[in-house]
Image (cartoon, rainbow, N blue to C red; front, side):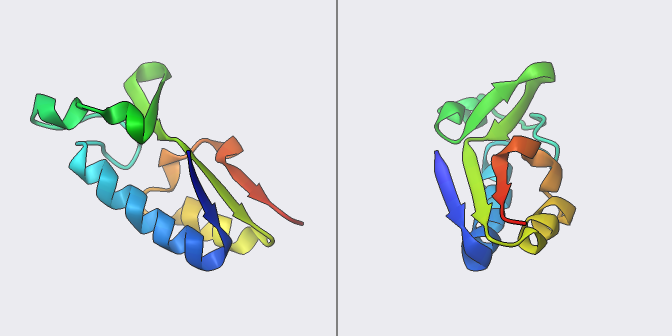
Length: 90
């Protein structure tokens, strides 16, 4: 499980998930659209398979303020995460 903490950790984490998704052939919604069976190999190291052949990151995103989480959700790969992956203060 990847733990991303604070603004910097979550910004770096968002870039990481975008990169690793591309390497494994996942689109921004977590659906496999790759071209090689090798992309599916060891997928479970980074992702859990959800319903509808969707893959979601094995990650917890933590921050004291919701602003960073909102930015991640609004980003290009924001739909990749489950809503309960986000933990933030009020």
